[in-house]
Image (cartoon, rainbow, N blue to C red; front, side, top):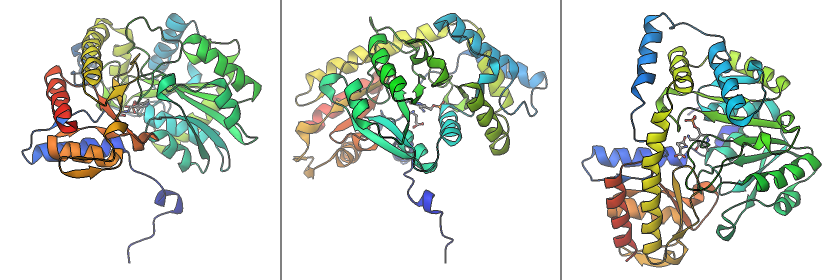
Length: 396
Ligand code: PMP
Ligand code: GLU
C-alpha cells in the first residue's frame, strides 16, 4: 500500500502557473506549435555582466556554504537600494536572502503564522499565496475585488474582512495576475486600517521596477510613519533582471522576525546558492540600463496586448499599470460552444484554447477569480501576435 501523505499536504494544490507551463513544454516537445503565454518568466537572457560575475565568483572560490541567511555584501546592497530608492533605513540583519521570493514568502509565513491565524488575501491573487499560508495551518481569508475598481482592495473591504484572528494582510503591487498597482494614497488608506487592526502586512513588491506610463510605484513601508515595524517586504531578482533560474529573492522584516527566518533557513536549506548570490550582487550594484531596455520591450508588448484584447469582441481587461500580465475577462464567452465544445469555466476555456489553438494561458480559477484568464506578455512579440490572433479565432 502506498504511504499516506500528511494531512496538510493532502490539501495542497500544485502551482497552476508551473503546471500550465509544463503542459505547454510537453506539447512543444511532441512537435506541436505552442504560443506559451502561461508563465511569468522574462524571455530575455540574464544580462552578460551578471553572468560574468557568476563566473568570476566561481573562479574566486565562492563555491562553498555562505552564511545561511545570505552573504553580508548582498544584504548590504539590498539595504542600500531601499535607502537610495525609497529612503527606508534597514539594518542588514533585517534582510534574509532566500532561494527566490517564493521561498522568502514560505519562510515569512512559517515564521509568523500559527494554526487559526487569518491572512487577508485580496483576489485575484498569485497562485502560491493561499497554498503557502495553508501549509502553516493558518487560514487564507480571500476577499474578492472587482474589475471595475481595477481589482483593488478598499479600506472598507479590509475592515469587513478582519476578525479577532486576523494577523496579516497580504498585498501584491504591482499585481500578479491583474497588472494593477495601488497608488501611494490607496496604500496609505489601507495602512490606516492595518494600524487600527494591528496587522502585519506582507508586501510583495517583486514587480516594483516593471511599471508603465505615468504610474508611480510606492513601497508599502513608506506610506505612513512607523510602517517598517509592521511590514515585511518581499522582493528579488527574478523579474527585474531576467534571473528566474538563479533563485534569489529576499524578505526584509522587523528584527525579531528576520532572526526567526534566518534560524529557520539555517535548518531548512542552509544558504541560497553562493554563485547566484554573487551574481545578484552584480545585478544590484552594476549598470541598470539592462533593466531599462527590458522595460522598453515590456512596454511595447503591454501596448500591443491591451490594444488586441480591446479589439476582440467579448474580451476586456483592466488597465495594466505594472508587471507583465493581462488578466482577461472571458465571461461573455463562457456557456458557449467554442471549437465544438461547450465551455463553462476558465479551466475548460484555457484547456480548449491550448488544445485547439496551441495558446497556453492560465485559468482565472487558479488565481481565485473564475471568468478570467491570465496572459503573460513576458514573451516575444511574434509569439504574442500569433497568440492573440489565435485567441481571436478561438472566440469567433
Ligand atoms: N511573487 C510574485 C507576485 C510572483 O509573481 C512571483 C513569480 N514567481 C514570485 C513572488 C516568486 O518569484 P521567485 O521565486 O522567482 O523569486
Ligand atoms: N510567478 C510566475 C507566474 O506567476 C512564475 C511561476 C510561479 O512561480 O508561479 O507565472
